[in-house]
Image (cartoon, rainbow, N blue to C red; front, side, top):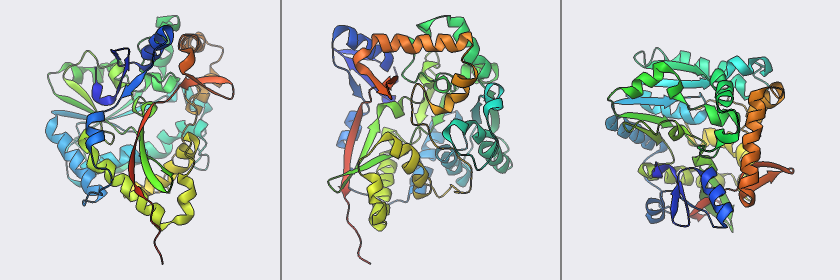
Length: 382
């Protein structure tokens, strides 16, 4: 069990899978508690801003990871989070052994519009051609010894549902049940990647996870850690047999608390310097974070991001994520789609009181979170 990534407790029993925890709790009428590095996060003083710059703290995190592993793999999308990680390595001339990119082009390309002006979340598949490929071309000469691997998971998506044949495909999932989340980190499905895990190396798989989720209550800034965000990377679902490998959250880690704290204070100072933006941090909603904060934070937190680069809006739904519209609209008459739907129905029927609904449709499990106070918003006089 990878407890550093978060886990669940129900009636004294620990679960890595939120699906299993909620089904068990629903059946036995018990409460579910999410644990996420509580000891480290609760004892850290979030009110004091670290002196180092964000880039210095990003660099330190990258250096620590390089020193701790024999073989480093970066999960890269070309988005702001993963690109910033990559640049932290490049800035210091630190070697990355492999950069892995996940795509669904074989299945989704005919539903994707390669148009830089179309940034709709249903068109997120365009990011690979419009953003990921250009960034990789820019850096391939900078880090010529890094292996770049592009994995198309289309066949795995459809074949895996067929192989299961029924709703049992949901049983071992951590949480995310939308098609993209189910498939995108299954690196061991591909022989050329699996061979690396079979070697006697200490392997670190770096993923970005998320930007800080901050909000204002009573004129004080808080930062939240949400279990759905922590569970968005189901790599551990596929790497349980490889004790030589670890998934490293680059940002949301107890080894990176100074970085997280600095990010929150940078956001705080941005709000203080831009009081007209304060309302964007009040009355927090997932939609506001995904559609507004995400775009603002790219340049607030990362010196490595260029706002002229392409990135689609983030999805606001969960099981029925807009990122997967190509699947639900283009393949609704397939056996794989029907088996996917069976799995969704199974969880809805067996985890009843933990289901959240959007517009009357079951669309995920209720969220658990921890919040930490950063400090009072003080507006500057000019």
